[in-house]
Amino acid sequence: MGTPQDRQQRVTLQRVDSHQRRFNVANARRLIYELNYAVDSKSLAPFLGPESLVPTLVSYEFLLPTTRY
Image (tube, rainbow, N blue to C red; front, side, top):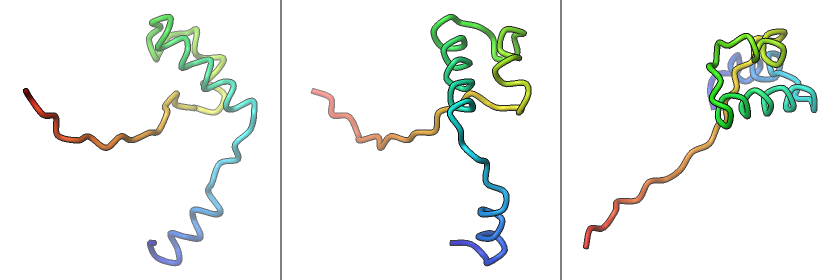
């Protein structure tokens, strides 16, 4: 939960998500993961540069122990 100050900062410092922002990140991820561009390449600058975005996708996965037969 955090302190009252932490909760207030989450509200005041949150980024506004928009279609344009998602579009830019999706295009950058496509260049990186499908076309093998380097993250610091000049081709990514138009998508990430103006807002200093990072092309990450946050996800998690629970790993279960594997059974060997």
